[in-house]
Structures are given as structure tokens and as C-alpha cells.
Length: 95
Image (cartoon, rainbow, N blue to C red):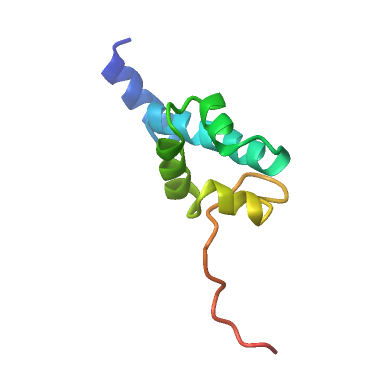
């Protein structure tokens, strides 16, 4: 199977290309490390395959809507898969 055929079959099966899939998995692993360890962001970035902290931070912010350091500060996610964090609370009035 050629590269193009593989990418098309992968996208049909998973709804995203193989590189996007790999990036999302790497960022999910990073989110768990941010939530569960005190490792520096630079170390986490390197451990999930990013050559620089800035490239990692940019990709993380695009995926989750917040910087890795803020994600860690708010405690990350309680359980399940991490989702995008909105930086501002929704406009709701107290009942």
C-alpha cells in the first residue's frame, strides 16, 4: 500500500490523517504528564517528541485552547480524555 492510499484509508477509518492522529495522541500524553507530574514543560515537550518548548506550547494551545502552564495550573482534566479549555467562564447569571 502506498503512502497516499494509506493516508486516505486511515482518514476514512479514523476521521483524520495519520499525522494529525499522532499529534493528538502526543498532546494527550502531554496533558496527562502536565496533570500528574511536576516535570518542567520543556521536559514534557521533549518526552512527547517536540524539539522545542515553543513548538509544543503552540500545538498544545491550538488543541486545548490554553497554554500548557495554564492547563497545569487549573489542574488539567479530572477524568477521561482532555478537552478544549475555554479561557473565560460562560456568561451565566446566578439562580
